[in-house]
Amino acid sequence: MSLVSKNVQIDTIDMDTSVMELAKNKAKEFGVDTQINFLNTNFLDITPSLAKNYDVVFFDGYALGLTVYLELERLLKPKGIMVAANLTLGGDYKKVILKLKDKQFFSSYFHFDDTGVGVKV
Image (cartoon, rainbow, N blue to C red; front, side, top):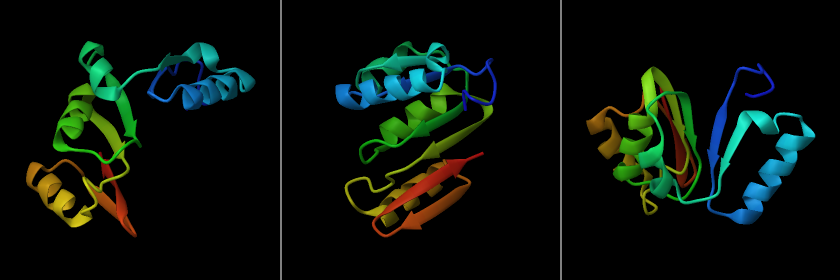
């Protein structure tokens, strides 16, 4: 996304230091490292301090619970886009989808074997 425009700013969060270093190196290689804020911490530890102003949120971490989905939704601007992978919530994709449909979190779901991806537009 940062290659599309110099106006794009990205916050990336990962608690794995080696993954974060790889991301920093790749960003520098592509000349977009000044557009990316690298946050080497746990998602739920840092998000309370982030402003509610994201056009897009993307989550591809551990199996999510409703707390994480609610926090992702809180971070979005109105009419923002949310993409979340690992919809397994302890390995039961169908239970997750039922919970999320009740909350109307996503407009589309994609199921792959024992995981899934949800998109909210």
